[in-house]
Image 1 (cartoon, rainbow, N blue to C red):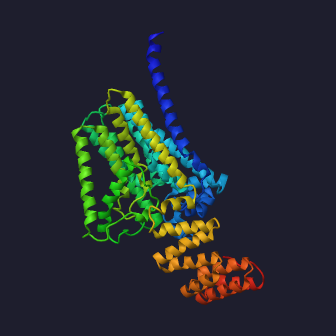
Image 2 (cartoon, one colour):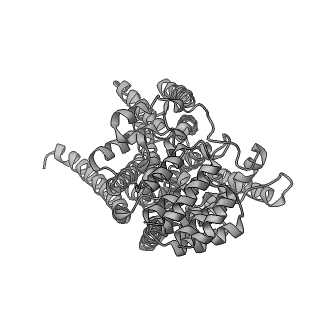
Image 3 (cartoon, rainbow, N blue to C red):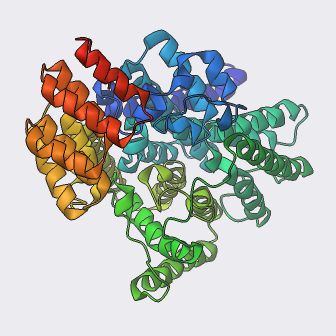
Amino acid sequence: MSSEDKVSAPKKTAKSRILLFSAIAWISAVAIYGCTLSFDFIWDDCGVITHNQDIRSIRTAIDSFWRSRDSFKDYDPSQMTHEIYRPLRTVAHSVLYKYWGLNPLPYHAANILAHATVAVLAFLLFWRLMGNAGAALCGGLVFALHPVNTEVVCWAKSLEDLFAALFVLGSLHLFLSALAPRKGTLPLWLGAGILYALALFAKASVIFFPVFLVGFLCIRLLKLPGMTRLPAPRASAWAFCGACGILGMAFLCIRHIVMGKTAQGAFITGNCWTTWLSMPRVFLRYMRLEFVPVDLLADYEAYPYAHKLSEFTPWLFAILFVLIFCGITWLLIRARSGLGLCAWLWFWAALLPFSNIIPMLQLGAERFLYIPTIGFACFCALGFASWKLERPALKNCLLVFVLASFAVLSFGRSLDWKDEISLWEATLPQAPSSPRVQHNLAKAYLGVGRPQDCLTVAEKLWKQCPTKEYAAFYGFALCRAGRSMEGVPLLVKLKNHVVLNIVGAEAASQGQADLADYCFKMAMEFAPDKQEYQSNLKKLHSKEQPSQ
């Protein structure tokens, strides 16, 4: 064998090993979530996909990059795409719609493939940072199989989270490649910038990326163990950080112009101070979910929050969070773990956009952990590499046990997202007093023709929360369960002309002309300007089918 052959052989072996490990990470992610290919559209998929007119044509989807909300005609509040700026997701869904319509399978397949690719990119990132393929595979598998990611992968509408992770990791890979002191790095810098821009148009939460890059370069300057294998930052690296910051600010301006606002809504607790005081408890839950991913919760309204600043419990959680955060940071600094600090920085920088500094629609959600979990997976890879045992087989057995546990939990949790009934029946025991969970479950029962089950839940909901909205829903459930003599008087008492019209249309379709006539007349009395109700009454008398 020649000397050149001896040199190239290890390189070929290393390359083959990386390809093999990449395939393992990719196949593991696909295998765990392959069951979602048979899942339905659920929850917000209704507004984002099934009722979203923007995905009906690719041209319209592309227009969503710059079209303002005011330009939409016949705006339907269920079309959530007008409230949340996710143009890249809209374009992707429009392509899927063009070829497959509203068949859920390709939408779920897109999520699975995107997640598997993100897992591979995470593995490759850990490998180039650590130089240890085995430990990197450990981290990649932790990310691929972690149960906290099930919400993003199983929920068809969450393609934006997957795209954001995909493009921001791609940008980071090109950034690391461009750090090398060689000529011809301009295409790498441009490519990294383009991928970051795509990540922004996927989801605005990746606005944290320049902050992480600055922190990453500062940690590299400290020359801590584990960081010296990376090239020292040059002026071009700092310039790229600044360019990404400018790009992020420009994106926020575009987003504000298109949406007409910056925040999604008001502070969820009523003011900024109690909202911010509530966040440490959410952060502690996030940390617990990374290590012990059980009791995953779909209902974000069930997150406890501070009602006033004088409450003791929120302050206790705030103090506990500060102690844990500072303690872990101090331990990492004392251990001089450069990569550990980078992983810790990534986790919290990626959570920063979800900290309610700018108010959001909820205190927390499991899907917010998708990108931060890359940092947790990096911690796991570092721990696996640095943990020395006299019996390496014991370490490997423990790793297999953890990964197998994650796989079982992820598979079990993914089954909860199969359809609306599965999701809300699984959530109800966790949040038995949540109005939204009960309301969604009752609507799911109606959707599959189970009016008696719907009525049971609707009655409990109305007694628990006697609002006009839930009273009207209870009245409608009574009508659907064949108890119109009780339901219609309740709707008349509430003067709910919308539901009365729906009940009238259903009664007409079932040949109950007298009931339909009464419902239409009462709807007209409560809303005389609604031509639809008058038209339905005329159709009833002319034996035509009224519309809902």
